[in-house]
Length: 125
Image (cartoon, rainbow, N blue to C red; front, side, top):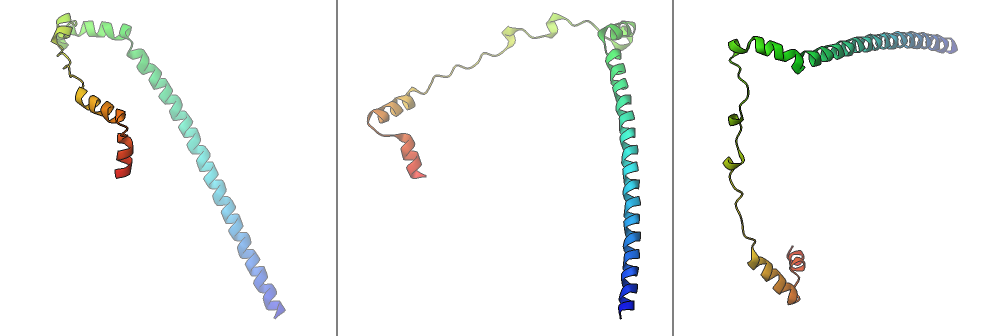
């Protein structure tokens, strides 16, 4: 009986040992994959930074202006004229609305009479 128990314990220990080593190597493989991906992300971020710098340089007005002048006829480009923008005279006037004096007068009258409209609203709800 004890011998069978010892064999069972040794077998279980060996299975546990194999499981732990398999888990260890799996974790190490995952860690190396993570490190590889982080290096790849760093390289891509560096490339993106370089591309953004190139884009900023290429979009500078001093760089774009000679190209626009060179292709002005082909693209049908013309300088902006003042007439293309509206003037203040073309804007509609804001409608003038008179304040509702009757509602304000009714509110002040009810307050003078000792009636609190907020309290009435609270009581009804």
